[in-house]
Amino acid sequence: MHTQLDVNEHAHTILSVPGRMQCRHRWPESTTERSAGLWSTQTWRSERRRTGDPLENMVVELRFDDNCKNGHHTFSITCDIYEGTKDVGGGANHDLIGEVFPELLPLIKWHLCSTDGPIHYPTNALYLAGTKDCYGRKKGEPARWDHVALVGTSPIPHKLPSKFWKWLRLKASRTGPIVTIAHPRTPQSFRPKYTFSEFTDKWHECPFDNVEEAHAWHKAIEHGQVTFETKPTAYSNGKEPELDLARSSAIWLEATDDDLKEDGLKQRLLARLPALVSEFNSTMAAIGFAGGDE
Image 1 (tube, rainbow, N blue to C red):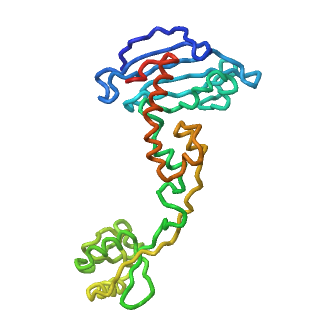
Image 2 (image 1 turned 45 degrees about the vertical axis):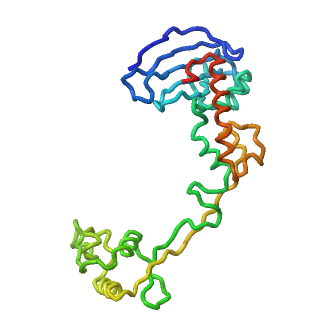
Image 3 (image 1 turned 180 degrees about the vertical axis):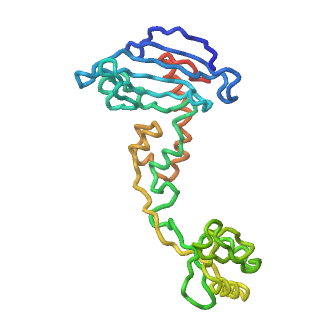
């Protein structure tokens, strides 16, 4: 699967922490075009150190490669925690890594940064710094709606299934005749339903439970007495700005609250990206990883 270019494990110190550069392989030309030639694996593992628990010790692993075939090299800093030889945990426990390996603290901010910038930049930072929910709605904006129809001059709205409402609004003049649809499996246990022939032939999608209702709607539609509206039924709570998380996501730890104001934030984030990427690539090269400029 891999074309091995450097398989020699060797001692390598990073920021005064002894460890070993364990493997370096490139993706072959036969892999996906965007990843061909990039490092598929490039890892370094530190010496073991005791954690605060006298029974536990920790190893930190640094990676800088395109193991996910994303078309760019990505950095990660994680740990493995052992009781003797038994692996009992770890992962991206950066607080504990910082306690046990304080020399590596400057690298933690680069976790999941790639050669083209932080993960999902600037989208993640914009969301975290902003006041819109995950659907892009601010507090008080409608989040859900009922699809209703008004018949004649009656002020009473009739709630309709969303699919039927959307179809009816577009094709009310071509509804077709009323048809009866039996349940496909157990017609002896379920009553038939009714629909317009141009809408559906599926029992579970039929909008009418009885033929009288179907005829009443058909007549109202034929006489142009039906109008369609949406009525909000729920409103977004928005979200509170999460500025510390935004700083971390953007790798902009020195950003002030004013720097992270929504107005113009995207432009400010994009403006700083070239310098950020340059610093990241230089850092990767300085600690001994290859590929920061690819």
